[in-house]
Image (cartoon, rainbow, N blue to C red; front, top):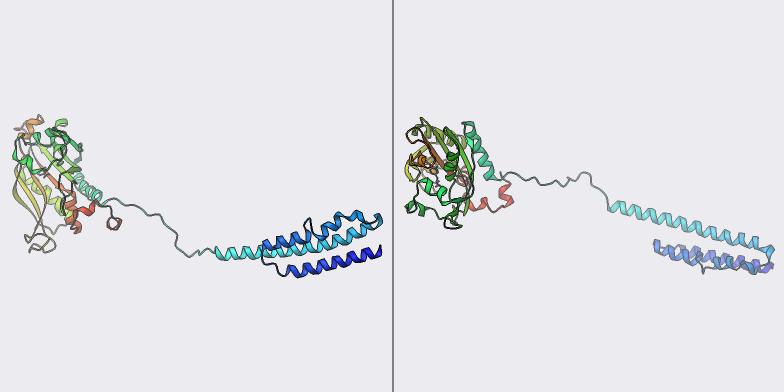
Length: 345
Ligand code: DAH
């Protein structure tokens, strides 16, 4: 029996020796698992010995159990040490790889900004609100009556062909200007009237200075003692606010069906200071808007007494004002939504 124990002890020594050798070869947690299985798993020498402990006489069992368990404990401890070491190494590696650089700037959300056209509309609104004007609105889908007829363009009036109109039906169209708001407002309000009306308008046109949709601001002042001098002062004040006090304003006689007399209004070119250059086509002047005294004929359409009231009106293209103000030479970029363009304002 003594021999049997001796030989068991030898076998356990061999097992331990082999384990010592194998454990130095282990390079990963996975390999460690295989090692654990080999020396402590169900088919390992140690497990099998403990399983077959009944082959030994009863009085030897405690000694054998103790001897085998000691070896098992040694192997277990070693495996645990190696495992802890691997886990720590892996954790360190992860930390190194995932290192945070606290000095890096954060990713910031891009903030949008107001479109340049909206900004110019607001600036113009501010100027006129400061002069006591109210803001009015009208529909973009209009009837022939408001867009043309009530603005003094009878059905066969030649001025109708000035507008390349988008017709929806014979009678319904996309408004070609903001002037119909004049009629709509006067229909509903008695004088005195001081309004500006910003909005989108539509014409069949497309080149570097025309787009099928663009923006206008209409102005209308109707009271009982209004003269051309008031119109001049108002538009000069406006032009100086938006372009600067150093600019000169001039009125050129013109024709509009709904104003009489009518004028086109220019500001002096600030690039050549009035000497003539490419931007102003050599004239020294830049056209900014159309204006005039309200044709008394319009008052008949809105039930005002032409003998008792008079007024002036004006209309301007916002994109054109923005182009002149910021030196932009192609109208189309306002609508292309190129972020590099929009970001500059
Ligand atoms: N409605 C005109 C246009 O679109 C602009 C205009 C000219 C408006 C003279 C006015 C005005 O109110 O008096 O071309």
